[in-house]
Amino acid sequence: MRLIQFLDLDGQRRVGMIDAGGERVAAIRDARSMRRLALDAIAAGRNLEQEIRARGVGASFPYAPILDECRILVPLDHEDDPAHCMVSGTGLTHLASASLRDAMHHDHMPAETMTDSMRMFRLGLEGGRPPAGAVGAQPEWFYKGDGGILVHPGQDISIPAFAEDAGEESELAGLYVIGPDRQPYRIGFAGGNEFSDHLMERRNYLYLAHSKLRNCSFGPELLVGELPPSVAGTSRIFRGDRLLWERRFATGREHMSHSIENLEYHHFKYAQFLRPGSVHVHFFGSAVTSFSDGVATREGDVFEISLAGFGAPLRNAYRTAAVAMRPGEMAAL
Image 1: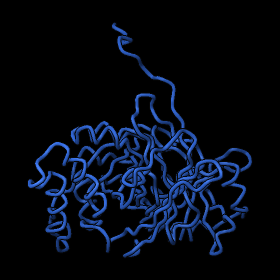
Image 2 (image 1 turned 60 degrees about the horizontal axis):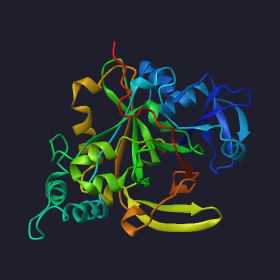
Image 3 (image 1 turned 180 degrees about the vertical axis):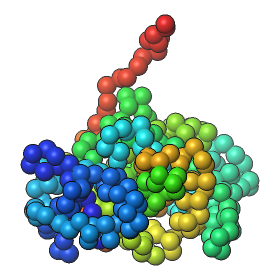
Image 4 (image 1 turned 90 degrees about the vertical axis):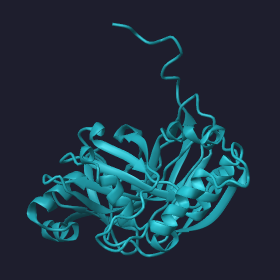
């Protein structure tokens, strides 16, 4: 089952189910947000598919105009308060990302010394897939922001004026809501563009935290149910009418050093993240980046990420934002 959030022709939020052919969207009755639908399912003791079957569907809409007219929304957010949506991620979960980070560190460490990145990656290889009920190796973790950084599919990703780079990161994201019992519930998975500043990170890997404080996008569709063991993807960059860069990649459980369950445990083990009603978007790490192939992106470039089985591709251009604050502009009270 694949679900979306979208705006109808009256500008009202709706939740819809994509048909098998990917051409039409059936609106789920009395569902104005994915978050509220999930919380209602929890309250009723049902999973998401059972809740949808209990409600039924109403009007059906062509899918293409929703995408073309940018009425598509990210498939999960906090519709009332973006501050109660947390966006985070895990790195060094795929061999390609570990190799790129390792190359960055070699600017600062002797070649014969294993870098911190490769040590972290090896910890995942050796202990990132523990038996059920056991605690595995702790992964790298980073904070991206709250719901204010989410960019809807088809919209421009805004990059701060001080950014040194604007680079895509094609990833899977886990989407979650916290129930009234303070239990995290996984709603499903989506493809995403986590977006980072790789030049800033390359200056010194301790700048990783700064490099991740960027807007991101995911969707347009949410896959409900189990994640396939292997997911094939394609990441592209277009400059005008020209295909600038293209790479195929593989993600999913078979291609990761950590199990999904281990990554989830090490995120939600923190009690401060278990606020009832809040939403979490957690990125699981990239397999390829254009930066590692020497691509320098420009304002106006369009990023496209597609994942087999996840429906329509995610497309976003990027633009440079106005300066939010200049040195010396701090107001004193």
